[in-house]
Image 1 (spheres, helix red, strand yellow):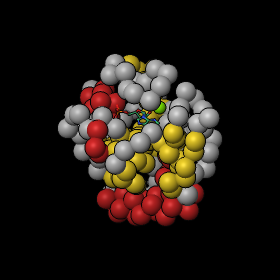
Image 2: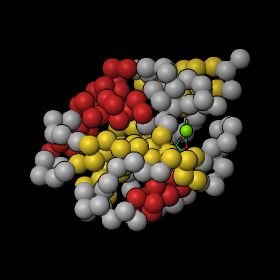
Image 3: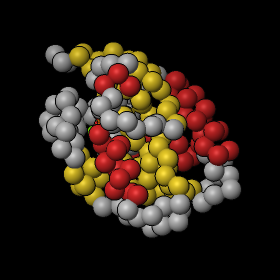
Length: 172
Ligand code: IMP
Ligand code: MG
């Protein structure tokens, strides 16, 4: 039986989102912010983040996929849904669920850069630093964890557990 251990409660998540939302609202108060969320994992996070900001934002989505079934990145990343907003000349903040090896984020940065945004920064619900393989900077990280496979609050394992309001460590 898979075992779930809560590591971040709904309240923890809310508190940390409020923290980065303050910073983002301050940093982008002059600009025209577009949040580009990576599907599917960031859907819940971007909804809460956008509502926590004290500045207006537009919201777009991009779909990338790196995981097959399982807990290890396949290393091959593909666009599963093209960017759906015009970001040329705009201030773009990529919203990710979790940055692990960094390969997905690197891929998204390179993909979005082709659309010529004015600025391009990164935000992630979870920054899992220990397994980083490529040099990417997470400008705004909500939580940092060292290891383990996490589910809930958008994060999945084989498409399960995304609906959970808190974040759990999954032991298979
Ligand atoms: P990376 O390319 O190795 O950085 O992996 C990033 C993507 O893999 C994330 O956007 C997630 O979709 C998925 N991922 C990485 N670690 C986890 C995890 O602990 N739980 C669920 N999904 C994960
Ligand atoms: Mg995923």
